[in-house]
Amino acid sequence: MNAEPNKRDMWMGLVRAELLKLFSLPTAWVGMVLGLVAAPALVFLSAGGTRKAITEGFIRDASDAAFQPLGIGLLGALILGVVVVSSEHTSTGEDSPGARQLQATLAAMPRRGRLVVAKAVALSLIVAVQGVITAVATLALSGMVLGDLVPAPSPGRAAAAVLYWVLMGLLAYALTLIFKSGIVTLTVLIVNISVVSVSYLLTKVTPLAAYLPDIVGPQMFLNQVGDVRIAPATAGVVMTAWVIALLTLGGWLFDRRDP
Amino acid sequence: MIAVEGVCRVRGRSRVLHEVSFTARPGRVTGFLGPNGAGKTSTLRVLLGLDRPQAGRALIDGRRYVELARPLTVAGALLDGSGAHRSRTARAHLRWMAVSNGLPAKRVDEVLEIVGLTGEAGKRAGRYSLGMSRRLGLAAALLGDPPVLILDEPVNGLDPAGIRWMRAFLRDSAAEGRTVLLSSHLMGELAETADDVVIIDHGEVVANGTLAEVVGEHPTLEDAFLARTAGEGASW
Image (tube, rainbow over all chains, first blue to last red; front, side):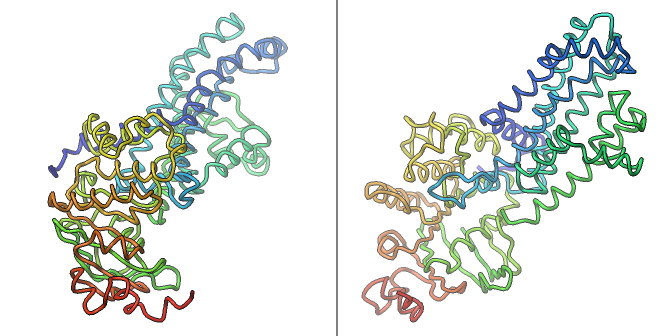
């Protein structure tokens, strides 16, 4: 009954459990659906403006125009990254306000380091699939809507965009591990992306700020981000380093804290 | 077999547990008794690897809980609440737990049947009554058919029929050879169910033995309990 499972079965079990958790959570579906429909929808909504911007020369690099709508779909990846942690901390009910799902999770998967990794893998898988579908749909739509105005998108850039999504999902996950709160993480990320980009303002103070995650990340697949130009491969390496560093910190805090 | 050995835990400046030692043996129901805040839940949390002790260790079948590769097949635990996210259905909750420990999907239906939730398995856990939540928590504890059961205040929130059901269930589990450790602050309940009793007060074990040994000369377990935690209950 208590036979030691082999390593592969053990990891498969943990990752599959985390996938099942996400698929059985309504909030996670919001993230999945939002990620899938937001970017293609934006292509249609912004088609007129984008066409005008290209013909009047506001968009210096027309190849960016097809990729830019992908940014909004990122919200889905961020929501998934947050939910994968915040759902563990939600109170299970009014009857026992102190009880959290995390207790059941740690009863089933008591090694916290492994749990953090399993969650990261499950999240990456979902966001990657979501990213591929969205990127293909968005780029195909852009081609149809904008026609000859944009050059055919290169597969390499599309792959980089998907990788960026995965890394941003993981970043949201790491931040939620650190803050222990989905609200704080989403507020920080959404305000920074949509209202005022603190990172962008910082680039006006020091060019080093261009290496902050939300500025350096889009350089993986966009040519025209802010004033500092960073090569896509460099941007990918810097972004990955940010995610690894924050995940390490988040995992360490998660391991130390009492649930 | 559960062995708690010299567990000490300090939280901030307050001493939560001091040199807590006891064993719970297979085939017996061990009652873990103490006033609210005495350290019962803290001890169980250390046993389940949720909190770390500053000294001592708590072992299940000779190993720390976090070292168990498929813990649900070794020990089942029922803590506060159902453990399920409130917007997930009971079946979905049990399903991911089963998968995480390599247990077959049919086991989910079996435990739902055991606790009598088959008809309500598609409901979201947040819509469950307190009694149903406890049953769902128990179903999760039973998923791996574990030889050890660790239950924190299992009859809390149950109606009289539920209490009777739980009592019979615990007795049957011990009769099947399982190690059953349950905490409670209800003396009458424990006197009906437990073979062995451990009394904890202010984070220290003050009595430990068979029910008869702990009751001793006192007329009831309640009298024995109050005698050992004397003076402290006067806050009424």
